[in-house]
Image (cartoon, rainbow, N blue to C red; front, side):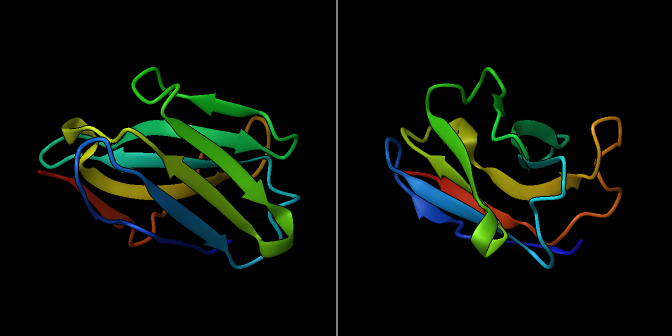
Length: 118
């Protein structure tokens, strides 16, 4: 499956952004779609994921501020980010986990940049 991220931008602290991850094929048969981020000079980390059963998972750093959702009809997963902080600045990527015991895909897309700055 080919995933394309969009929706990044420049936002002030406390602001909101919604990222989109559009898949090239039906996401209803994919076990999970996840969001990851890579701050400048740091490793890529897990942010949130949502399963085909609509179960969301969040990292502790974003829990309560970010909401992941999916629209199977549009083959798209969204990441609603509220109360953004300076430390949320990163390049955001989405990825897919085909099956329950499958690893995340090895290939990553272009991602989308989120910059939180006053």
